[in-house]
Image 1 (cartoon, one colour):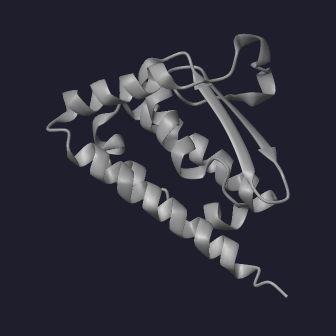
Image 2: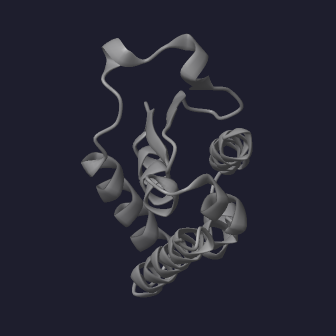
Amino acid sequence: MTDLAEPTTSSATEIDAVAAALEAEFACLDDWSARLKHLMDLGRALEGIPPADRREQDQVTGCQSQLWLVIQRTPAALHIRADSDALIMRGLLTLVLRLYDGRPPTAILAHSPAVLDRLAVGRNLAPSRANGVHLIVKRIREAAAAA
């Protein structure tokens, strides 16, 4: 019989490793303008959601930009796609996806999203953008709890 806790522990450890890698990635950036440029570069690389696939029920309100979040549940993981009409938000969504896409719901719930604040997201963003990140994370955690 296999130990069902092992994949969750491993996945939670994977999220912790991604969080540590993100902190190291941003620690190399000297100031907020360098971080902002990096976020915009990440935003340009985000695959996103094609406009034809953006549905009203996938829109996240409460941010100054338009946000879409699509979460598909499988027995083993949540598969997440996200997009925004703003380049900075697309970069922030890339960070969120790195942390949570393809992870088991229990691992998502076991991990605090505080790394996003430690990356100075909360201190340096417009309040509505920071709120958008928190709303996205809240929806992902709600989907994980419902899975």
